[in-house]
Image (cartoon, rainbow, N blue to C red; front, side):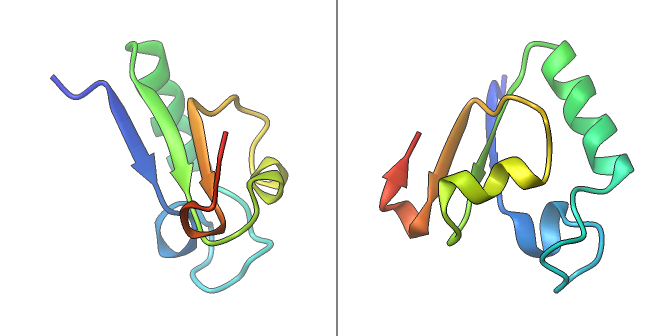
Length: 73
C-alpha cells in the first residue's frame, strides 16, 4: 500500500501551468485532503525554496524538499 507521495508544483499541483502564483487547484486540494483523511502522507519536491511552498496551501506537508534537494524539512 502506498503511504506517502511526493509531488512537484509546476504542471502538477498549480492551478494554471507555468503561472507561479496561481496556487493549488481546488480539485487537487480536495484530492490531497481525501488522501490525508485516508491516512496518506503528502510532500512537495521542488526547485524552489522550502519557505516558498507555504504560499500555496495552508496544509501541513509531511515533507518539503526544496532547492532541488538541497533543503529537506
